[in-house]
Length: 239
Length: 282
Image (cartoon, rainbow over all chains, first blue to last red; front, side, top):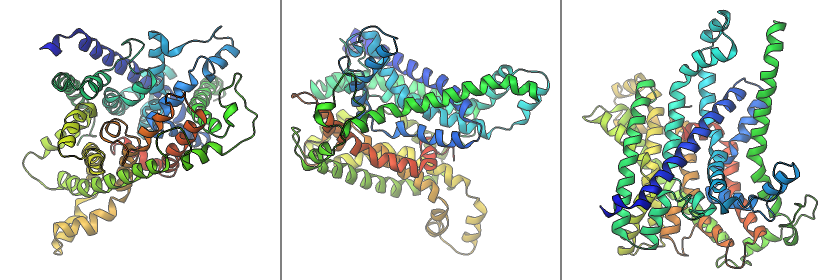
């Protein structure tokens, strides 16, 4: 009961939910835009989608270390080139304040995974029949209406699959955030997996860690089983 | 037609911008890593960033020769990672293929439930497993040995690979199998002579997925290894030690970790996509 009532654990769960929601949400929207842009078959799109595969093969520990260097306020590329472009006036200490640290951790996840979402959706776009879209165009629907009312519903199974796979992985996030912010500043980016690591494997409060772990697991199973049901209804992917 | 083309033009331009912007964003951190790894030590941290410099391999020599202030030479760590990844992948495929075949073909009670249950285990967060595994490993004195990484990695990747292979097996027409069975081939014989050759693409997808996940894994390796089987992702973190970060060495080691999987990704990209989507995209 101590764990359930512990406000810091509850805050970490909220932090985790927010992280997952932001990261997966942005990845889905950006991935959809990218998928639409990449879907027409052409040479540059083939080359493009091959290059876009690279980030998700990069070892997460390495990408977190590289990001930390790029975001360094003294000699990082990000601050320097943002100043050169006139977007910011003085260097931003990305990892020292909560809002910018959030931009950093969500940004890293988005960098690593948006293209994965895009590739799933692109496979969907290339696989769905073209006739309904053409019919809609003949009936006078504009590009946006066709996309929203015809293409998007056909894509639903692929969207559900992408969301499921990303959601599951985003909840497991550990290494990248541990290295990038270590949960800081303060506890602003302390995901539940970081807390579990700290209390279980560094402070050796095994009981408390196990209790929080089970709490986390229950939460996850509720969310994932709901999603699996949605996925099962919309697709034959599970057959 | 001309009317439609002029209307579509801005959309096309926007599409190109999205694609190229995304490619640049994908590449910048990788370019930074590669460039920094061949800069002379004095040039690794400068403002403005130096784009003109004399390329050097000193960092690679230091990293592979073990002449860094990190506690351990880096090359053995890459070996440890490779051994763990290859053994675990072999084990995963060995167990996963028969399991996938049974789920796809053999009619038994609770099959559907079992299949869904296997899929739902992919959500199991490694951190929740890490604590009990650590306690067990300590009591069995398995800390810092190969099995204590290989077994949990296999356990974590098995559901993914089973699910993936199941969708590949399900695609093979059952008639081929039935014909072989009528001709007197046993179940094991069918699996070996008919299914195995036909699911090679699936096996490739499963293998590359498992290799990448094992190679990149950080949490278990951090918790369960000390020095004898310490893997590369854990070792690389030590370049950011108390003497300040050695960026040249760090980026050289990063490149060494990332290079093998980037090459594999480019060569086997289609298989990787099908692996990552658990066979939904073939």
